[in-house]
Structures are given as C-alpha cells and as structure tokens.
Image 1: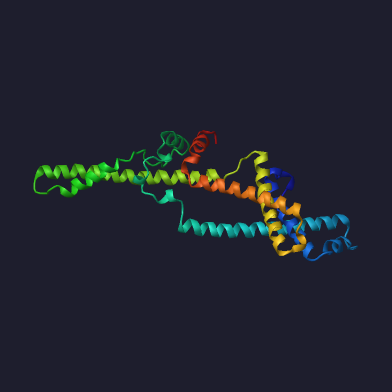
Image 2: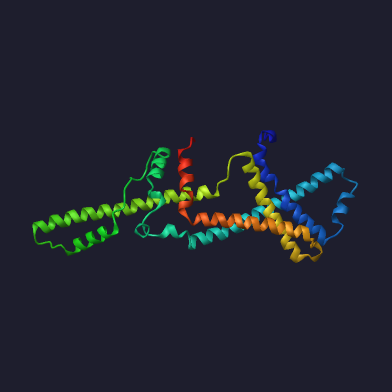
Amino acid sequence: MFDLDKVPFAKAFPFLASVLPGFSLLYLYEVAHTGTAAWFFSLTVLGYKSKVALFLFAAFVLGYSLNKFLAAAFGAVGGAWGATKGLPVFDKHPYELSIAPWRDKRWRSAYARRFGEELPQDLLLLPKPLTDRLLQEVSNLRNDDELSGVLRSNAQEMLNAALLAVENDKEWRSRYLALHIEEIIKRGKEFEDEVGAGLDSNLTIASLVVMVGWIAFPQSRILWLLSLASCWFVLSLLATAAKVIRLFDPWSTLKAQIDSLNSPQ
C-alpha cells in the first residue's frame, strides 16, 4: 500500500502546490458568485474539518487540472515550433561554425569518461579550403595515366576522410545539444531547489489567473493583488527569457556540462 509518509516533502511540494492556482480560481468564482463560500461553510451536514478538507481538495483538483492543461498547451506549441524552426545551431553545416563547444577537448574527454561505450571517433574537421581543393583535384585529374590514378586515389581517400569528419562533428553536436537542453531545463536536487521550483511555477499560474480575472471580472480589481501578481508574472517572464537566451547559445552550458560530466554519478 502507498505510504505517504515515505514521500519526501521536497518531492511532494510541487505537486501539492497546485492548490495555489486553485485558490485563485476559487477566488474568481467567489467574486463572480458572491456568497458561495459563505453558503458552503454554513452547511450543517458537514463538520468544519470536512469543509476545510473539501475546500482544499477542490482547490487542488482545479489547480492541478489547470497545470496539466497549460503544460499540454505550451508543450504542443513548443513541439510545433521546434519541429518547424528548431535551434539555428542544429541545422548549420559544420563548416559554418569555425569553433563549437562540442569540439572542446575537455568536454569530449569528460563525455568519454562518463559514456565510455559506443562513442563517436574523436576526429577533427579538415579545413574547408582543403576540402574544396580536394574536390577540385578529384574532378580535374585525368584517368589516362598511372600517376593521375594514384593522385586521384589519394585525393579521394583524403576527401572521404574529410566527409567522415563532417559526419563525426554532427554526431558530437547532437550529443552536446542533448545535454545542453537537459542542463537548461533541469532543476537542482537540493531542498530549496525542489520546493522553489514548485512554488515558482504555481505562483506564476496563480498570478496569470488573477491578471485574467482583472479583465474578466471588474469586481475582482484589487490594486495591491494585481500589482503583486503582475510583478511576479514579469519576474517569471524574465526568468523564462533568460533560459531561452541560454537555449540559443550552446556555449552557455559548456562549463556546466563539463562539471556535471566530471562529477560522481
């Protein structure tokens, strides 16, 4: 049987904090239907503790449902955007990037120590001018003498090595960017990180509900409440914008990735 006492508070808090946007929704309902809360708490068929428990349960269900709905909506939008646009660095040819964080020797060494099996080869890109010259030589060499045949074979071999290095660079890039995204969206494992993340997200949604309610229900327009909700929502937007900026900058997680890869599992 499921034992609630064995669930760490830090893990359960983000889940339980769904009551915060639920309280906001119940507040708006009370504003739109004044007297509902008074009627509910005046019921004589339920004890006071039962009423409080039902109220908290209703707030939790409403808040959790809103969380799931918004997560699905933003996930769908983000997935569609990612499928059509993606990150610019995902689509660039390796020769378009003179330097790249996945070519960093420290990162590759740390990655190899952590994921020792089935690693890509540690190859370096041949300079693009050299690859272009090889292509030109292969196309210009004649086939009617032995020397040209040898030169063609050598140039073709070098060209194949250059093309292999390009594909190798793409493979390292895909592994780096997978960790890059993981590094940006992950949250800390400390108590304050777990609790803070749950509190932040639910307070942001609660603030959004209050701001929408300000527009939909004039009678809910309490200035201090709107000011608090607006400030919190703006702070959340700024934090999200900072993550988006990091997402588009693959260098932003290089050191963090190296530290994480070198840390004990």
